[in-house]
Length: 449
Image 1 (cartoon, one colour):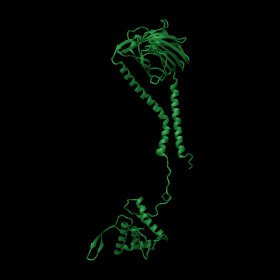
Image 2 (cartoon, rainbow, N blue to C red; image 1 turned 90 degrees about the vertical axis):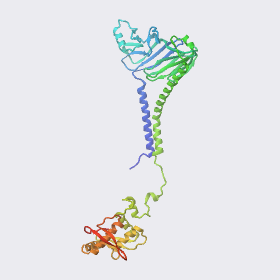
Image 3 (cartoon, helix red, strand yellow; image 1 turned 45 degrees about the vertical axis):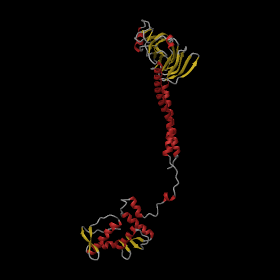
């Protein structure tokens, strides 16, 4: 079979495929996360030194059927002083053919005349408390619309003898902000600003801090102010005496920054890992999967070791290492034939073995040769000789004993396991040790070589 791709081309193709999948996956995610039904294409906030806040939202509507352009506050929102920390509503500018509205933290609705009952019901049903915005009963066509808001921020202010603190939270639960610009005026009382998210770009223009960036859906946008006590003379709010304001502010912001950095690190690590995966696969292949070239002597790769005897090779691949069997015996006969110690031939379907010499034999080959000589006539072994011997053993006890001894010798010394029809034990006299048959069971069966 023709291999059209080499090993290296195959792994490079795999790397290319995984890289394409990684790029496609991130682009698909970016595509679906870009513009939903609506986004804020531009958000601008201007925070003055006296606590006045101007916000400009440019909403981009991508589908038909949207009736609301709104801004929701977590802090209490009202058009009058509540006597506790709040966002004081000052005014709003909405697109043409729109109704402006304010639904304060108590659920009271402002901006809609009493005779517009259907509109009041629709806004009351859908609007959150502490929400202001624009409503179009006919719906907004896809496009961009700008709404401007004016507020007075009346925040809680923590202070001690040296420092004061203000937390200005502008957004937490919201749609995507494609572009963000926040301007904060400093008349000299701001010691340090802590922006969240951490990586907003910051510049200083005159006495204005300017932060720019973007926000994904529901990403926190807030600013922590560490100020001198002079700030209390400029900001209308609700001061509360605390201890060690500076240390508390720094500690809380450092902890928040650690969380933000950790989450950002995981996000970018996952994104980077997506693109590093193909390189990782290639590295693993280089380290563990690549086929290496080795110089191998021809002797090892083409022919077996010719010095090993067939019965040794048979021991390695069959049965137990201490057992011989008939396959080793047959292989030894063929090897002896090849070496010229015997000659094996076939005449009329009878096997004929001619014994030539016993030179160069090892211990096992000697036992094989000894066995052949025992059953040979004039150094020739024929099948018919063994058949005659078995037939004579049926009527001659001496021949029967000889056959039994030959069979035992074949089973014990030649093929290596004891299976005998009789048990033999030694009997001693004054001059020698002989063997007698203690028990012989069954008939003598012919055996083949």
